[in-house]
Length: 361
Image (cartoon, rainbow, N blue to C red; front, side, top):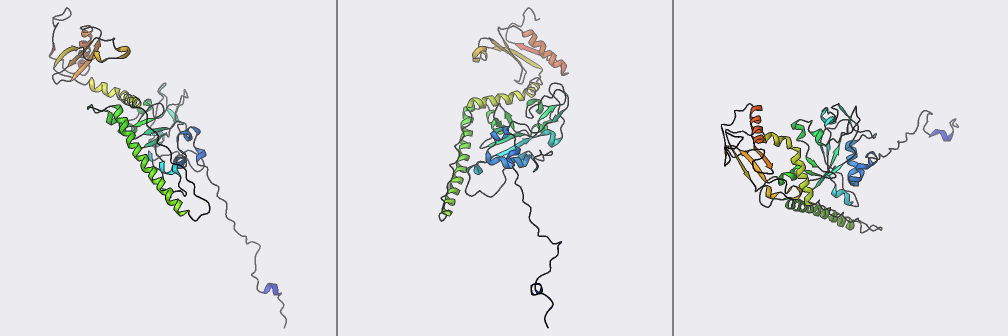
């Protein structure tokens, strides 16, 4: 008996109009480098721009509102093939954002009004460490709500508003273009024979040279391995040369950084000096210090008068144009210091001569 079902429909699977084939959506790539301002891309190396941008921005391009850490290191991604030289010379990053990280309110140095964060600070500095370099990025850009004056988040006006615990986390001393890590500055503080800025500059440059040589050996070794693997590939492997070694600034720059570090602790040093007292004082003048003055101030002073206590500590030092001038004001300043600190006045003060002058008893 003939079948009533057509031959073409007997073995076919029935289909329904509601069934559709799912097509995967195309994922658009994110241009992370484009999120960084032009001023940052000029300083940050190309191999570091992507991962630094991921630390600062959301995938939508919006700046991250919450930063949980200060130090960021290059991610341990697989090595590129063929090897790229920039991957081997990547640098760390330190983000300084006291407003967004800890919620510390800051005041304008001029009008004392509250400042608001207006994005990321557009100037990034390279910091010279003991054997490497890293980036210093300002995660806050404080701007006054009244005078609209922006302030550098790493300036001394901002650091002085922080407590000691948070201020001690800032690891560098700034100059106009670069910065120096505080670990390097500690090598300039000891007053030992042969310790100078020239010696420190040569030692740190030697350490940087050794680190550059190690990374260069790694890169060239991986290039050699890649060439051996590409022997049977028709296209020849081409590798870029490693970047040249970047020399450090001169010794005069290290002296400038050391001076800036001293000026940043000027109030603490004044407080330590003016907190020195004693019961028995001695006043003496000398020319040995003034003979070491050079330049325009070489002939500005002839005598240096010091007042010390019974422990050999110096209470005050004054440069004078002549011996004996201004000694009464010097002694009155010492008396005022004792009175303001509620300290008992010194019992006696010794001088080597002219104790019975017209102004004395």
